Length: 291
Image (cartoon, rainbow, N blue to C red; front, side):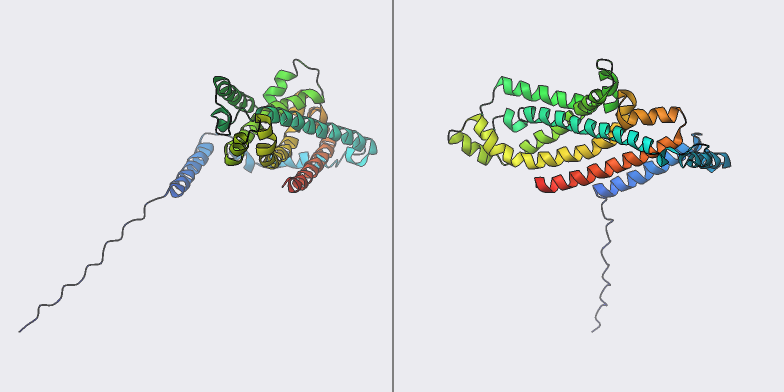
């Protein structure tokens, strides 16, 4: 009796793995980057100038001017008077950044609670009302508006009202960072565990006692972290705001570039980089203490 041969088992067909959101994002990024570079090269944007000898000659002449090579007089970075002047401007720039973050921080501490959704809805133990909801939407709108306008535009507007100096630059930086810090601080409150605050409220604590004993101790460490991080960003923006607010290293940098005093420009860049490093190290140390 013959036995029929067993049929070969057909292996199952492998399915193509489905693309995930990160995979699609990577493909879209590569495609957009390729299209962007093709557009830049084809549209005549001047990228070919990078490969011309004249452009490199101009760059070489600019670097020689920065280093003071070929100057008849002593370069600025080798004179004590120029260093003292740059140090004085650096102090003004540092004062501008500290004043800006102080104003923004105080403003946020006053207004971040009503701008939190769980405060307006009564999740933290308070009774919701039309006033709390109105305050929530108004403050959220203020946060969006103040952080949506760049610091340079705020400086241009404020300098028309106040005389040029440290204060207009500090106010411009403060208004912009008020919106950023306000949004971040309100979101800290929204992400809090509401049970301790509600327990205090049920136990008979007033809204101020709930604020000082149930919310601020949890919010302040993270708020200080955000504040110090924004200080690191602000110290890098002061030189740009100084262009129009007429104060600090920014004003001097603009004037020296207009006068083609490139040796002074190098000195100002050295002071500016030293100031950035100083603020970064100080903010990092203060963040460790805040934790």
